[in-house]
Image (cartoon, rainbow, N blue to C red; front, side, top):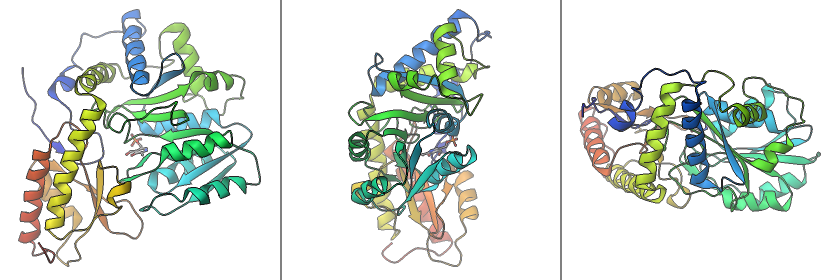
Length: 373
Ligand SMILES: Cc1ncc(COP(=O)(O)O)c(C=O)c1O
C-alpha cells in the first residue's frame, strides 16, 4: 500500500491517523442522498452508540461540523424553560457557558479550580441553592485544557438524585476512556471524529437517550442547522442528513471505527497510558513539572509548566519540533504558563521516547535544562 508522510501530532486532535483511515476517503463520488450512503451513516451511528450504550435505548445523531457543533447542538436544543448548571473548570467548560449565554439560556455557572478534582459536596450544595429548578447539568469529562478527568460517575449520581439530565462533553475521552451512558446516568454526550476515534475532522457526534430526545420534540426550537431533534427525526425517516454531510470524512470514520473495534477501547487506553507514562518519566527526569495529580489525570494530555528560563520561547520550540515532524501545542490556562503534549492518535510510547529525546536536546541547546535534568 502507498504510504503518506507520517507526522506525529501531539496536539489534542485532530490526531495522527493510520494510512488506511486516510485512504478510506478515496472513494467513487456519491450523492449523499443515495440509499447506499444512508446505510453507511446508519452503520457509523449504530457502531458509535454501541461503544458506550445499548442502541435500543440510545441513539447517535451526526452533524457535519467540529466538536463544538455537537456541544452547541445539545445545549441549544435540549435546555428548555428551566435552568441549567454548567460546570466550568477549564476552557471547554467556559465554552459551554458561552454557548448558553449566546442562546440566552438561564444557566448557573459552577466555577472550580482547573487543576484539582471537583468538590462534589460543593457542587451538590450549589444545585440545591439554585433559585430555579435545575433541569440539566453540563460538564466536560476530560478537560483538555489541563488533562483533568472529571468524576462523571459521581456527578451522574448527584444528577440522578435531583432528577437532572446530565450533558457530557466527552470530546477528548470518548473512544479511549471506557464510558457507559446508562451506568453513569448520561442523557446526552458530545464527541467528534478526530480525537481518540482517530478519524478525520468534520463529524460532530451527539449520543442521546432516545426517550429524552423524543421528549424535546414539542420544544420551541432556538436553533436551525444544529437542531438535535430535527436532525434525528429527518435521518430516522429519510436515512439522510438534513444538509450536505462531509461525505469522504464519513468513509474515513467508518474505517476508524473498524480499527477501534479491532484494537478495543480498553487496549487503546492502555496504549495511550503507556505513552503517557513514558512522557511523564522523561519530563520528570528533565526536572519539568505538570499540572493535575496522577489520580485525577486523564493520561491523554499533559499541561507541562514552561521552564523558567529567559531563552525559552514556545513558538521557537514549536518550530524546532515542527521541522522534525512533531507538532506540539500551546497552553490554554490563564496565568499559568504551560505547553501541552497529547498522546492520543495512532502513536506509541516509542514516539514519546523520540519526542522526549528531542525535548532534552532542545532545552540543552537553549541552555534551559532545569535542575535535576
Ligand atoms: C473537551 C473539548 N470540548 C470541545 C472541544 C472543541 O472541539 P472542536 O475544536 O472540534 O470544535 C475540544 C477540542 O479540543 C475539547 O477538547
